[in-house]
Length: 328
Image 1 (cartoon, one colour):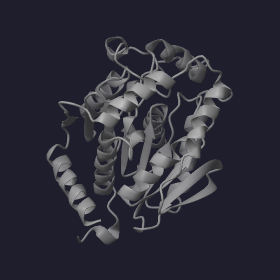
Image 2 (cartoon, rainbow, N blue to C red; image 1 turned 60 degrees about the vertical axis):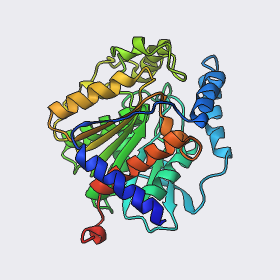
Image 3 (cartoon, helix red, strand yellow; image 1 turned 120 degrees about the horizontal axis):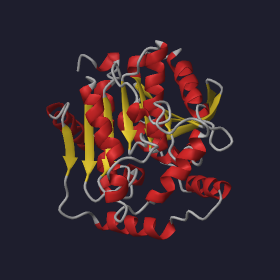
Image 4 (cartoon, helix red, strand yellow; image 1 turned 45 degrees about the vertical axis):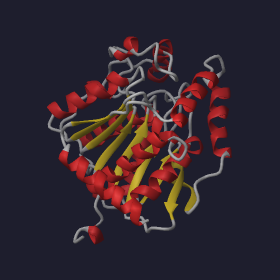
């Protein structure tokens, strides 16, 4: 525990020094476990399956043992089904509302609860993972409506300053779109946002869609547009609610954007960081060489992923300080 506190404090100092600047994590060589994970991704990704088969495959992740010293509860938040992960060893001081990835068509709290639990333990937070409605049965704006409803229900009994909106891939884009929707509606803003490899441009106009196509071990560039069209349905792909990269970003809370360099959605993160900074938003862009899409999901297995989750926990703790922790 003492060692973890020292590491958290050191990471906090590094983030404070780099506030408003790009944070790049550079490794001359990646770990053996990271190389093995990359090979596994290349072998197991299968885009020939139906949506129902892909959903079942992702939910099977929950067959693996969930992290210990965390209490899990099935509940509803704002009328949306959810799993709540609460650390039991250290009292949680804050809340994280988490939106899972999966191209807005697959994924669920069950597929992401393990990573949510690891984040809960490191950030001393209660993490709520919601089961927002999925396309093609429920296209835009159903997912964003569910995210907004869950946030409003959460802050009805929690100080918004102690809440983080987080999400990976499509969930990262949903978190950004939700922040914009809340701001436009006059809702109180959360303390910060944590976006992992966010999918923010469904038009696939970023340079990395082409330049990283041959090195990305997980996402095939040609699948982006079909998935985007399934989610957007009759809404234009460049609509700010669908592609929040093109939204007005002024007035949003501080954001940590965590992305692997070897992914086709890299430009979705780098352009978002540039646009957000131009709008006056505090942004930390955390880029990891040789890493892939949403690599922090491998925390506990891959050292680089574990380190990334520690950096995220430091950011969240700093931007959502509990009142009891202020004097310290």
